[in-house]
Length: 276
Image (cartoon, rainbow, N blue to C red; front, side, top):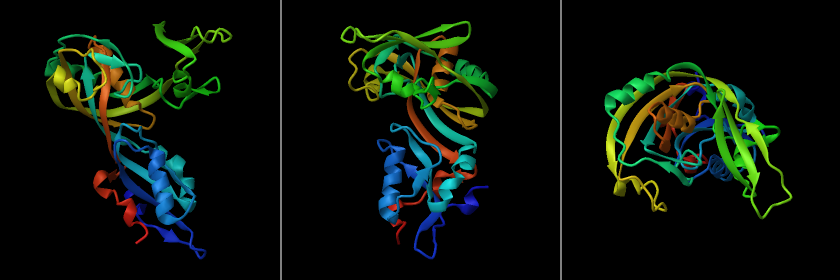
């Protein structure tokens, strides 16, 4: 178990620190930002993390220091739990609130019973498409880098149970060529999904998540869930898949990691007190 070994920083005879600490990453900070904060606080460059969180997400992050950076692979393999908030009725090109709205359905109202039924379809071992904005490499390139390449327009197509991204050069880049990549799947295990709440949001409430978007649905359904899953599970992809099962576009609007193995949010420490 991990809890027994975290939040204990030791120093060798040369004063070099080692240890594993749990921190609560806030929204707006990257995982690398948290690593940099620990580096400055402890005065060492040898710091990493065991499982990144997106900038728009918050929650539990394990920071590895000194010789304990070698434990990254074993810690990455731990099961995790997330609180996720999914908006049914619209989607973005990044599957979260940081992207551009690409699809929406007006007046979307989904019954709680229908949400509950659909969620249970995703419990168990399954092959999940990786998120197109993940760091997974395809033909030597990270998917998120390809998707953010402003020289190309991208389009996602589904056929024969495959997911393919087609990249077409924009008019100002006539020397580039079209190409496509197939999005890989990964085997994951979702051990449980709990439906916490279903509520309807009005346009003014939806705008809180998409303040720069002028075209928004008048009504959309918001679903709060808790997901217990294996490593490699993409919650933003899960959100999109849940929406598809309901026949609706969907987008992940909030994400918080609450547990890694037996470590919970309450175990997180204040980075600024590490040097004390």
